[in-house]
Amino acid sequence: QVKPLYSQLQCYVRGKLEKKYPGKMPKDGTIPAHITGNMWAQDWSALYPLVQPFPGVSGVDVDAALKKQKYTPEKMVRSAEDFYKSLGMPALPASFFERSQLVRPRDRDVVCHASAWDTNLEGDVRIKMCITPTEEDFRTIYHELGHIYYYLAYNNLPPLFQAGAHDGFHEAIGDTVQLNLTPAYLHRIGLAGAPKESEKAVINAQMQLALEKIAFLPFGKLIDEWRWGVFDGSIAPQNYNAAWWQLRQKYQGVSSPIPRSEEDFDPGAKYHVPANTPYMRYFLAHILQFQFQRSLCEAAGFSGPLNECSVYGNKQAGEKFWAMLGKGGSQPWPKTLKELTGSEQMDASAIIDYFAPLKRWLEAQNAGKDCGWQG
Ligand code: X8Z
Ligand code: ZN
Image 1: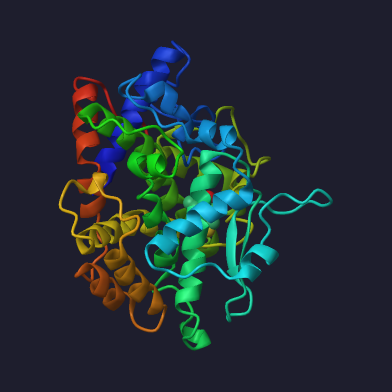
Image 2: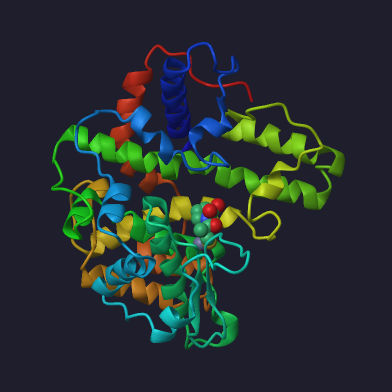
């Protein structure tokens, strides 16, 4: 369902890169992973200045605003907390602020990959991050608090039920909230100017989000395909790195910047591989979060295009969300999904609807181009 949209995005971005680096791009239609500006080419947001559909039409620069307003890590967390509170959810416990690691310690080396914990299954919730005043970290905090609010919501269930409906639900909560960080919301909290309401501004905003959420999809799929291949032996140790890059090329249409060999172990640079954290959860979350958002927007009585909805401050949406979180792992996930969305199926119709304007625009831009890559 989502591959055609990804292919259009990959094709458009590659075209822009070809213009910027004439004669330097691989001939097989792939994008060298490093020029996406992300170590894993899993988030292409850094390319936004290059691929912005309508330059000069309202760009939201959250990075600059955070720095200019001297946002501290705690202030960034308070901003995310405020969003959840606006939905009627509780304030974070004081212990959260006392015991979380929000900044990189000065005296020792730590793992800085963001994570969220309920350390005692009784509400001693904490996050572990090394927050800097960037848009990426700002958005990641909203993601981590999704885990924290899920922990709090199912805290009074028996320990065995203190879990997400499935892993993908856990990853989708904060991501759903991220979908509400619209230009209008960012303006409301003072991190962006007054939003321009034009079709061009909508396409710009969609491109910005797609570089994060659509670019991620094939990456989200391939990590566990590689891990499961390792576990069942179909990927042998002498083939670990080659198999990794084959999947990268096949699904993402990206290639390694320089030749690699089995002397290298590139999968090891992705946190979840050495940490043995399953990854399919993020792929599922990227589909689910749009289903969740559609239901929350319906609960809020919103009837416009899904991509223009923000449920900030909406108690009806919040109640529905909180009720779902409170079910934790106490019943089969399709039942929980049905209670929120009316359907027992995970499906991509919501993400497709959401990005329909961008897809139309990309198809028009790519018309006549030779899209696709050798996989
Ligand atoms: O690992 C994470 C979160 C912690 S659960 C920061 N994410 C994946 C990643 O960074 O690879 C969120 C998006 C995908
Ligand atoms: Zn997470």
